[in-house]
Amino acid sequence: MTVTRLDAEQRDLLDLVRAYAVNEVGPRADTDEKAGRFPRDLFDALGRMDLMGLPFDAEHGGSGQPYGVYLRVVEELARSFMTVGLGLSVHTLASWAVATYASEDLRREALPRLTSGEWLGAYSLSEPGSGSDAAGLATRAERDGDAYVVHGTKAWVTHAGEADVYVLMCRTGPDKSRGISALLVPADTPGLVFAPPEHKLGMNASPTGQLIFDGARVPARNLLASEGQGFRIAMRALDGGRLGIAACSTGLAQAALDHAVAYAREREQFGRPIGQFQGVAFMLADMATGVEAARALWLEAAERRDAGSPYGRIAAMAKLFASDTAMRVATDAVQVFGGYGYTTDYPVERLMREAKVLQIVEGTNQVQRVVISRDLLRDG
Image: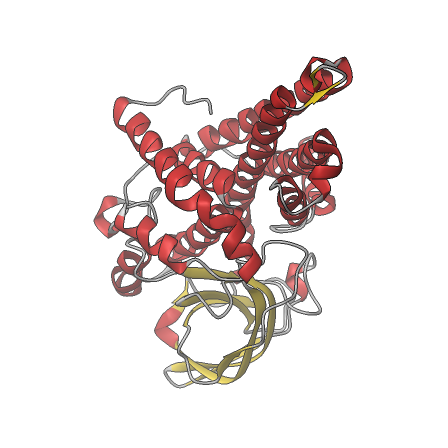
């Protein structure tokens, strides 16, 4: 992985993460996926390594690292085990909302627990009837004294039933977008129950499920920003979240490429390694080019974010390109393996199944094209 423009401490950090990912995280991927077992202990270990709050200020337990360094860590973890890389991205998405919009009292209480890994965070925007139409959500929260009473169902929540706190987008007013607010909801809130996790094509170690609110009382002090600001929070959060998915996609694509190159060097047909045949060699060249291009795109977006420059359009581009690249590279890796690639004896089939969801989460790639094209036309 390219590690340019990093100081010695940051390089040491990435070396540490790489060693941990290879030696501790990677060996768990196949067994945990097959068992559908969430690896909470790996996230606890990330907390002990001070990796759960990388891009946040030190005063709240973070490490104060640039976003580009944080994304490199996400890539390394996803390269070894997608559940862990994507889980860190989701956790950071929730933590960012608290760091940016919580009151000072709530921030002091909640953020250190998130950045230390004591709490695992989750983010809840989609519903059974509203996914890409984020402003169409129906879950409602009504003020009752010093609390909000929440009714409704959220869907497709990563870490559902495993997270300690959820950043919840809910309706507090009639306006489609300006009537949405954000609440920080503890997992043990009475009236919040968790549906059984979804049965998925891949990512089975990462639970995805519904949150069902039946009169759940959430303290009013857990409101982020002010009423009606939830949609703005959600859209800003997605810009950063898309970069996390781009980094996850690149990590997965790099893993698929690594496996394909190793196999092409060793597998012999017609008396020589298959990598010496142009049809395979050129496929590997295209795969490697896509991986490097995807990484360069989100690194550029991260630099713009760190510099305080607008980065929404390039974040959408990075998510779009990197996740499409991950799908193509993983599929090509299966092709390099031939019939063996279609069996569960080799990890490339799992990577291909995992790659598909990356084209869907944090806004489908069709939505990314809408975001990009609207921004282009608005500039004109």
